[in-house]
Length: 540
Image (cartoon, rainbow, N blue to C red; front, side, top):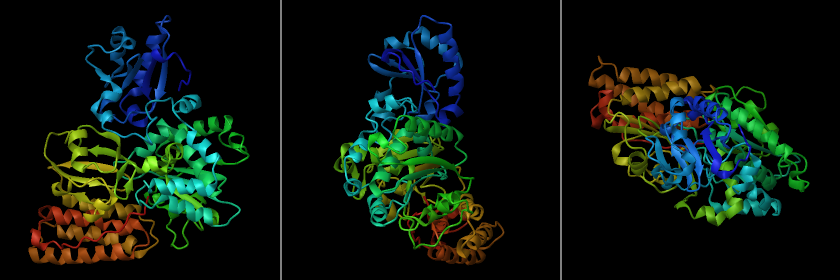
């Protein structure tokens, strides 16, 4: 990770993001280093940056030129010498892998990058590079304001929890600020476990300092002096980068006992989870942080009043906290001007599954799901018809084509009994068996339930059994009707009586699959109970 600053025109960028590494970016970076060693007259610096989010083009290599950064991809190690022989620092050329100016690519031009503005642009561990791109401006503004003034800006911005619950961030902060205590905490929920999601990881690997800055501002806002990043153990690259970034921030005076000479204190450390999906639920996460088994706590009391070690605690997702610096830098009104209705600002949408162009886009709320899937995602990679889309993780609804015109907006999704969740979108073509997908939802709950409450612990087990009876090829329509009625009653019980959203949301994908794809269960449409209740996602 080279943070040496060479002349702007002589920098070449290769991503260190996990997605890029999985596509071979490390081998490409090594080949570039080997090539440069053999060319001692070339004054070139290799910078390991985050990914631009165009995963299908990784390994992506960018060259800084007088015109701007020019992208090549996907690049293999054997392409390196040929690209350099085309004089890539001179500008655009006709090389078969030359994609043009990175910022002019349709994927990039259609975004509104606020939280991810620096991801892919900077060396994630170079504090000076971060500052040159407006880093720590929000922190400096916050240091000159009262805690209440900071909270009011966050309220004004309309920022809601980006982890899935969509609870207004400013209200949560206000509660912690108003609760008297000698010790308060800021906890970042980086236990990103939903299927098809990688926004947290991409940001932590590509711009960890923005998360540190956001947590610092949160600490100033509520009077907290200690922060923890609860990171899933499956993210070793993010773990490494976060720890290095924290050490460098401490050395530069941005963490510790005297933040930027202000006399204010804030310490930060990373704690690893151990592969439990339920620890994405905030109270279960706090139990785990305290060294206990990760099980859900009953609420009240709310974590904002009695959280970590019984003290007032802000628990926010990575993207929520990382969105705060731009709010404090540009103002709450600036951020609120993006989006629609009560969904303000931007949201990172992640495309995965059977999609031609998988990756991450940061967009203002309001774009339709259809535009995201077709215009930006390019449709199914198999070139087959798209049949279903699951938004919001493994407990999100399966959406049929009639819903793909729905705007990306929390309230609009709620109207169709769906959730936006953490912005993960998983695409299925017409070969998918939706009965199998519904069974998976129940089975997922069996495996991941903390076991504390009966509706979730036992209900999911019974749910798998009932779906198996429902889809038994030897069952007649009477038996199917009986199983369907039992499944609907079971879903009601789980939704209404589960202690947290793990059990409460498990019926959402099951009921959506039954409603929109009854034939996959061997059912006629009229046999399907039209009820489809909705419980707000509070698990992330």
